[in-house]
Amino acid sequence: MLIDFSFIRNVVAPCYSFYGGNCYDPVTLFLLELLKLLEGYNDYSRFEEDLKDPTKGLRYRELTGIKDRIPDQVDMYNFRARIGEEVFQEIMGLLVELLKIVGIVSGQIITTDGTLLEAFARFRGCNYMKKCCECMECPNGIFGDLNEQIKIAIGQMEKEDKISKMVTVEMQCPRLDVIEEMKKALKRKKKKISPDKIGVFTILKLKVTRNPIEGWENHLKYLIDTLGLSIDIPDSCGIEIITCAVTCDKEGALKYHCSKASRDITARTGYRRCKDNPNKTEPVFGYKAVIMTSVEIELELELPIMVGTGPGNLTESAEFLKLHQRLKEYAPFKTKYHIMDSGYDNEDVYEYVRGEGAIPIIDYNYRREKLTKEALLKRGYDELGRPYAPCKRVCKANGYDSTRETVKYTCLKDCKDCASCEHAVKKYGYTTIKSI
Image (cartoon, rainbow, N blue to C red; front, top):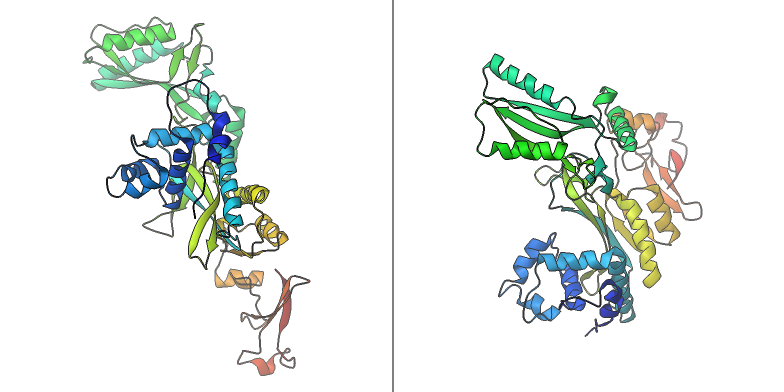
């Protein structure tokens, strides 16, 4: 079967300008994005490497119509950033609708899973950063005692007979919403920190040294020009700027770029199971892609039908609801089964899936539950939701009532002490009914 992808040009046309040089065909760039997704590449760099490989990338180049210059990872990333999430999902929806018409995608079995993609930027310690964190006003007089700090540092060098000493200027985050979130996090972790120490970061770090580095005068000049202060340095000493998050704008106002804000302010820290030890989790600073896939058993195909991306701390269960509602706008399927991992073990997901007339198959999320034998007996049911009989044995499922959405559990008199049990006279022994 051949598919005419030319409709993509019409969909993405509003994302382009009338002016500029030659650009890649958006059909080619979208197909590259689709191949990257289908082939399981987590980043553009490795995909670019295989795409340019004379042998391995030949099939990719033929499928996407590349003849001359091969797009690099910057071209592919810029295309994705240009069209945005909404347009990408719109194209995916139209493709799924087309595949549904020709009978390739049925949507009877849909799996949903999220994967973390590392950002190129390095995490610097704050998960609450916004655009405003890149250029905020410095408090008045914050550098007023800088000369005094330098004088004290020189005195300590002489007293301790050291060749250098550090001088730092710190400030507290001015965003009250961030401070409140940090207080809540500390309370959950049961940590006690003085309120004036919460959200404190360094905006200037200097090294005062007895043996000045070459060109240290340039460091001093930059500091004087930026801060607008007269800084006194003895002839035998020099300074070196280690970090400086402060700049001076055209009006002469001091601005700072929060040192805790990463270069990529839209990325966030998410957690995944450690590859070396599945019992532990590891942090990943970047983005999360939630992929909805249709499993076609007869055709032996797994085709992605909707993709959503967001920061690394994205809640997958909430993203599933959004993605599926978006999918219904293009191609409403009569889905029989939704298969997901424990990240989607949420009441809202169960209610939504059952409301769509489908069966949710979701891995159980223990959420720090106490699973000792004593704790399970105290709450009355085991980790699989099966209730205990009075003799402390786990009951077995024995019938489902679809109208009431309940399951009947019985002990089936599978106990050595049944003769002395008050439920022994019943046909199935101890019986109880539990709601799903």
